[in-house]
Length: 285
Image 1: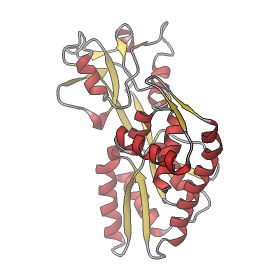
Image 2: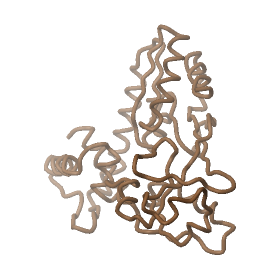
Image 3: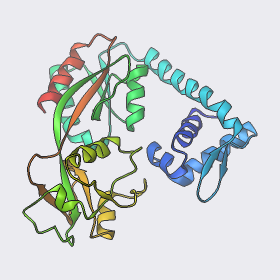
Image 4: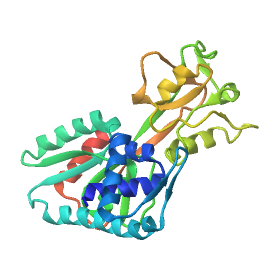
């Protein structure tokens, strides 16, 4: 039994889907299925009843899950405890923050030449947990999080854009309103995967007599831009830095859509000079 198998096991338990768990863990679906099968052989139990339509945890899974989470939490605590005592910062983010983060890291290292600053790729929930466990010093997120022991500091505001296929009936318009878009299907990931975007849409349509016409949720192994090409009548909302060639972006009449980008740190840890410099660099990058 390996710790990575327990991490995959927890991901499948929380997602109830091998494909979504694979996406969350940045591995292929076949790889995560293979590792779960190895874990089942090692333990001599069946952990999931599988079918083409569902993944159902067994009684053994219910007993194993809290222990697996405890083991993973201990792993993070061990890593935090034995980290070098020298000047070192671990920044957890995803690749959409890479350009801005690396620029800020370069500035912070110029101010602290002896510092080691790591840029660690983690999914949203793992970023938050890594900071809470002390394995990472800082996490970048869109939106906010309300969790005891954590401090959230807004860094900048990011624009959102309306995107369609270039074949969409509205693609040639100078600007559009949500009323214009209301009769066309809106493609988004499931709300459980993208709470922030669903909240933005809910607020945008709050003053209209009807809400958006949601199309089918975007599967975890698909991209919004590819779905737009397959559905030229549909639209979606993208982060401004995720635009793709062949996709039309429409200017929204009236107030633009924006979301905050925030830094998450532990409330009980005194900020080092390096972390203070890095946060200042992220503010101004």
